[in-house]
Image (cartoon, rainbow, N blue to C red; front, side, top):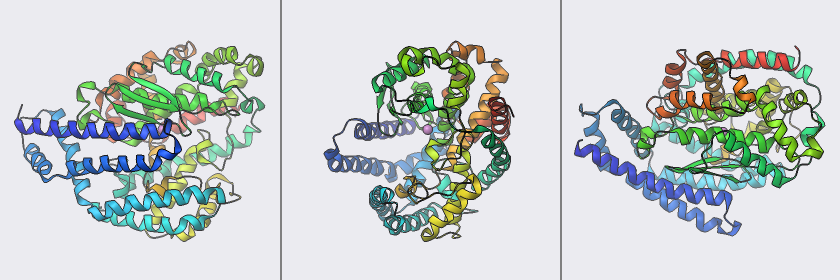
Length: 497
Ligand code: CO
């Protein structure tokens, strides 16, 4: 093995270690830290990420990468690591240091303005900060470079190698199929059943989550499940994948489906090849691919009739009084109840992607200079009406509902839907390869599916871009059709359409 390659491995290892330290501090902040620790913690994280940035942008790293890019003795996997590392290096060095600091600063200010603006339902509190943020993100996109449109540079941070034009056509296919389908389903859905808001004991809900992750083969010797207000999954380091869930007293669907969602993310992380743990190739290829796994496990598995039938008896044991007489069919229909909602994070799997599509449309217009930040509340309400047929009563449940824009996560939203499409496409292929999985699910046995995903997706790490991986596994280019077929088939049966 060449000395230059060993150098790259050493740099990569150091960056991994600094990442582990920063992630653990962040995990602790979200799960354990008392509120008054926030200021010191923010500084500690900034110090560590600053050191990591210096290490990454060291000119010696660039020289090492240039040598390796021309090294014919490397194998395909090493070459993939060099390619990914080079992308990161270029991105980190192209953006001027002042701009990086300015973005970090405005993100802190805009986020705290958002935490004030939302409860007050007053967009004007956020507006000046968001204007600054959008203008800095434009500068950043221009520094990174783009060919067709500026949004390409933003998207590339989250869905590497996918272009805005591709996302536009995916969303066209998705929304033109989904809107009429959703209309039909919404007309038939009626009011949500009462059992969904039954008040269930929090400790027993936690016990259910603990039981569930074990049934889904989450390895507790290489991971943890904790509670946090916003569920998330964080790979701290090799052999240590943290996931959290959230118990809500009057909505037990959170403890079930947020847990399955995060377990999907966590299984992916636990399935990455450990021998590549310190190398770029040992990571996931995109946020969309990551989200495909959370959605596949949450929706295609967790919300299937068969898996609901598996879960219900255990729920009845824990909540005899509240759910003891619940019919399995009613349980299945209830947890899949579809309605016109204002809030994306509470949306069902049918309407969810319409929430995402309207955000993508608005973001793209902002970066084509077709929408000003000042006009966002109006633009938002109009889009909600067009996509979902509801008009928010106020800004809190409208344009202020998500924190993403305030922290500069622009170009992020579409990955939720790209993930949905990857999930449906992969699940269709899994069924073609493995045959009907419903009998497995009814018995709570997801091991055949997990083995398939392990072989086809998880063990591949970042060998290929997400787009390439999807095509390689399914033999088909990404399309919205498998998702539309899945929704049509499932909900036609649920609502007798
Ligand atoms: Co997720």
